[in-house]
Structure formats: structure tokens, C-alpha cells
Amino acid sequence: MTRVRDLRLLPIAGVVWAVALVCVLLPMAAAGVAVGLWMAALALVVLLAVRRGRLIATAMPLLTVALAVSGAVAAHVAVAEGDRASARALATQPGRVVEATVTLTTKVRQVGDALWFDGDTARLRGGRDEIPLRIPITVSIEPAQLRDGPALDLGSVVTLRGSAKPGDAGERSVLVVFAERGEVMRGPPHVLGLMSGLRDGFVHDVAAGLPEPGAGLLPGLAVGDDRGVSDDLDAAMKTSSLSHLTAVSGDTVANQGGWAT
Image 1 (cartoon, one colour):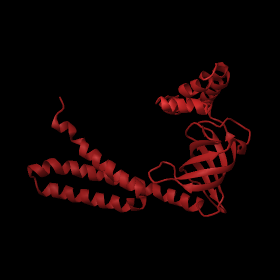
Image 2 (cartoon, one colour):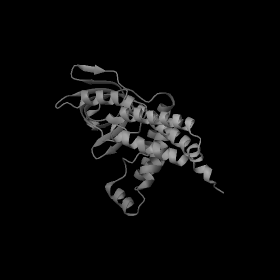
Image 3 (cartoon, one colour):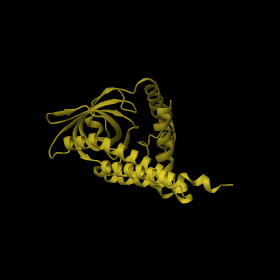
Image 4 (cartoon, helix red, strand yellow):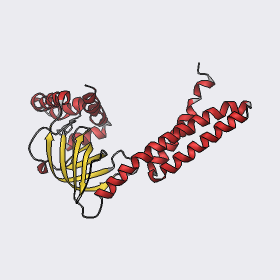
């Protein structure tokens, strides 16, 4: 049976999540929010030390912890915003060409004629300015613009050149890069390379020999590779509310399973 005191962390979690949401949507205000919350927490500690009433002794410790933890979250956002603001200023000036070295953190997915993936930068250059900067970005590139080389997959390192726009507020990616040219400098390392080879072998050697629609559907179900799913099959799966099988199940295996190994 759940007791009342077992729910004491709920208000703390609620306050922390609310502050995190505000700071993510308004990152420029995060530093002020952090200072304000810590000052409020300090004031409550002093009040708690002076007064020992029952209500104060019960509520004040919870509120103090909530404010202190929320302040830490706001401070983290404020610290990260420095690099994010530098990246946006460097990359998003009108007409500026951006160059980046990126390590892939997700599998590559095909949307229309373009390949899409997420990654972390190790270097970002715009015009004559260059900064060693680790920020998350989303990349779009057409296969024809990618030079032949090692496999482009989870863990690969790729250099890109193209234009960029800021990511939406609340999104993980600081920038969305539309690459006009790309080159894979290094394929997936170690176990990730082994897993990439196994996935490619499964898609091209095993599943490709099956009759349709299984040949296009099975890779999406098993390893999140839905490039073989035809438009008609995709429409039929959406109509029958089964599109989550390739959108969620396969992605879980391809991304989380790949990193777990």
C-alpha cells in the first residue's frame, strides 16, 4: 500500500521538470534562473534554521531541495548555452558555408531522396573562423553528394560542407546542416563496425532474397532499416496502425542495441 510519505519526491520532480522546460525554451535566461533559485534555497535554509514549526519542518526541506536541484539544472543549461550560441553565430550567417567533422550517434535513415542522421561535432568552421566544438547536430545529405569510402553508419566519422540553420527550441540538435558534400573519414569502430557489417549482410544478403513485401519489411522490423519499404507498403502500414513496428522497434535495435554492444 502506497503511503503519503512515499510521494514526497513528486513535488521535487515536478518543480525540476518545470524549470528545465523553461530553461530549454528560454536558454538565455537560464543563468538568472539558476542564481535566483539558489538564493531562494539559501533563504529557505536560513528560515528553517530560525523557525521550527511543524509545517515549516515538513514543507521547507522539500522545497529547498527542489529549488537547489532546479538551480543545478538551470546552471547546466546556462553553461551549455555558451557553446550553442557560438555555434549558431558561426554557422547561421546568411550565405555562409559551414564545414564540420561529425561522429554519428544514430543510424542513417532515408527520407525522400536524402539521408538523415544525428551526430556530435568535433570541429566547426564557418568562413575563416574555426572552433573545436562538441555540439549535437542533425545532418541531411543526398547519397550522390557523399564520396565513396568506409561505411556511413553509427560511430562513423564524416566531414561535411554545406549550409546550416538553428535547431528548434527544445530539440537536442543545435544546428541542422544541409550538406552539399560529404566524405566518410572513418567507418564504425570496433564492435560497432562488426554490428554494421552484420546489419548490412542481413539486409542485402538475407532479407533481399525473400519475396516482397517481406524483403523490404523485415530489415525495418529487425534492424530499423526501412529503406526497402515501398510507398504502398508504408501507406498500408499507416492505415492499419502498424507503422510503429519499423519506426520504433527496429530503431531500438539499431540504435540502443548497437551502443549496448
